[in-house]
Length: 169
Image 1 (cartoon, rainbow, N blue to C red):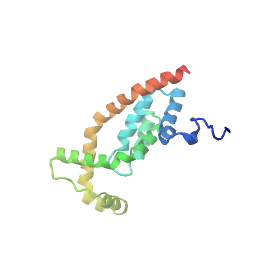
Image 2 (cartoon, helix red, strand yellow):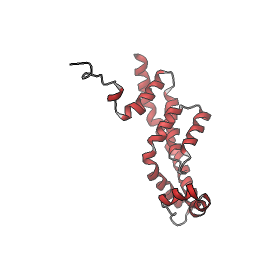
Image 3 (cartoon, rainbow, N blue to C red):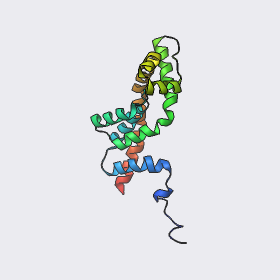
Image 4 (cartoon, rainbow, N blue to C red):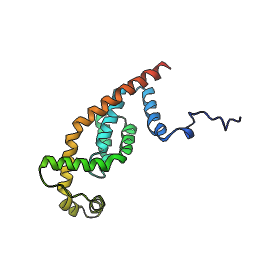
C-alpha cells in the first residue's frame, strides 16, 4: 500500500464536517488553556444569541457578547452558524409564545414578505410586523433564562472530560 491509500483518519480531508468545524476548534481551545467553563459559556451565550428573533442581528450580538464577556469568538460564531438550521422554527415558536403572553390574536407571519420589507422598506416592515417582532423578542426573553443554563450545564461535563483527557497526554 502506498502512503496515499493509507492516510490516517486524522487527515483533515477525511474528517467529518462536525469534527473539522466544531470538535477541532474546541479541542484547540482546551489545549491552549481555555477553561471548559469558558467554552461552555461561549456555547450557551452563542446559541442563545444565535436564535435572537430579529434577522440580521445575531452576528453583531455574538461579537458584542464575546467582547464584553471575554468569550471565545470562533466558538461563538461557529455556534451562531450552526444554529442557522433551527433559527426559523424557533422564531415561529418565540412569536407564538409572545402572542400567548401578550394575550392578543396570533401575529402575522410571512417570512418572505418580512425579509423583503425589512431590507427594502423598513418603515413598512415596522408598521406591518412591529408587533410580531416585539412578540418574538418577548418569547425569546422568556425562553432564554431556561436555555442558557441547560446548554451550559449540558456541555460542561463533556468539555471537562475532554480537558482532563487532553491534559493527560
